[in-house]
Length: 198
Image (cartoon, rainbow, N blue to C red):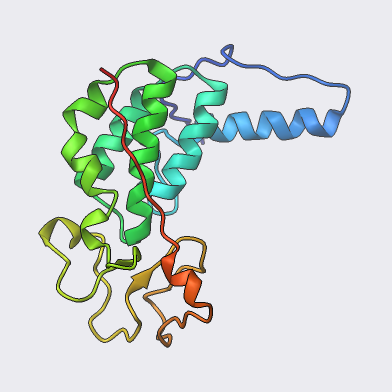
């Protein structure tokens, strides 16, 4: 019996770490190997469990990958894939913007930002903003381009409002609407500015 390992291109010599602590060296090697092994499909996928990218997980994997290798095509491909095939957590879509910006910061190549600007702008979820600055998937604001990611069951009874810094609502469970105890919290919102280099 033989076992074969499939890896996307990875330069094992691009980064190294060594110190006097053997345990810390082993942690480094494990982390580096994880970043080498997980994108074997050519995309920052959720490992072997689902084999599909999720925006927040992919962003973390991109940041880690860029610290141990200087191969950027997986990051670009993942951003393009997620712009066209969003995962289900609505608020995770905003991570696609961060991924595109990180790609620019590491490569200096603004083509992805220029070519996908309108798609990236939509991923800011600004079209779902309420007057108080919170993002809501209710009240008729969901449009076709949000549908793949905003597919919460109709029977799910919640406020449908997502806010930054709160425990994410789980569409698999019925939960009561979130109550804002402090009136000033209603004014809290996250704003993302997309800067396009000239």
